[in-house]
Length: 82
Image (cartoon, rainbow, N blue to C red):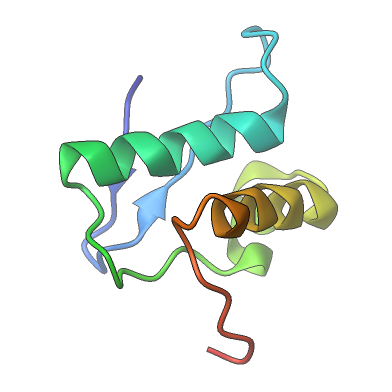
């Protein structure tokens, strides 16, 4: 899996429509992989939902579902307004 990181430090998500894996799970796995490989460190900020929606042209609820899953796993913490 290819993980990209912008110069700003934010992860750049990529979706594979042929994988058979739901888009939200692809986002979750990419964050998990980025943490495991050291591309993301605890405290790093994930991209804003609207930025992910704009870059991937997916439904905002898909991104929110992925972020909720990451929160449930203890890998992310929501900070509204930041």
